Image (cartoon, rainbow, N blue to C red; front, top):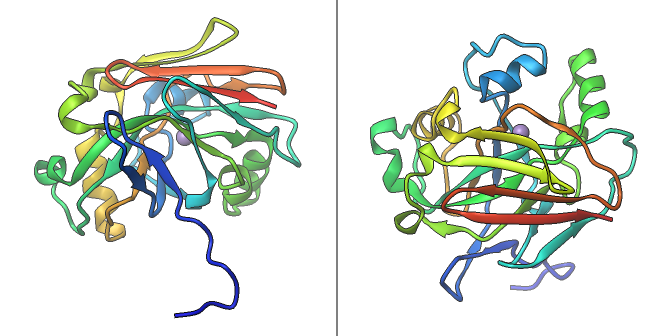
Length: 231
Ligand code: MN
């Protein structure tokens, strides 16, 4: 087969303890999935889950032990960090029941749902899609994927983000409004999940701005840390 131009390289994420990489298919994100974050965004925290997507090539894959970098994006004056547990799907499916969700999960990673908050806010106000605020280039930094069997009890893991050694976000995955299995049930009712799909499960409270020169250090217990500098 030949193409009219060279096809783009496959986007992939390193895997802890393996030389094989996880090829990325789609990036699904859950909105407002921690009650205290929903409240800081002006909502009650009691609503059905909702989803948005980022393009797969928004991934910035950071190798273990290194600091990744993202450019300060265009058009915004309010770039926010959102530290998130990312679920990596290894076996696809549709209409997956929460009770069966675990066997579809390949592993977990620490991710950042970087957000042009001012642009997202403007789109919200106008009832328009969030894409320009959420799905822009380099908006999805992620650390290595830890296979599920090595990840411990992710559902009860501490999740945090620091900038310059100061806590910005600190919570626990147990505070998810819709837990991992319920999220997979809802998501797979709307889309057929595929191997390679990533699910950014939502961020706890404490989202705030970063500027060029800041280094974000995020982590989830059992999954290591993710370090990303804004340049
Ligand atoms: Mn988010």
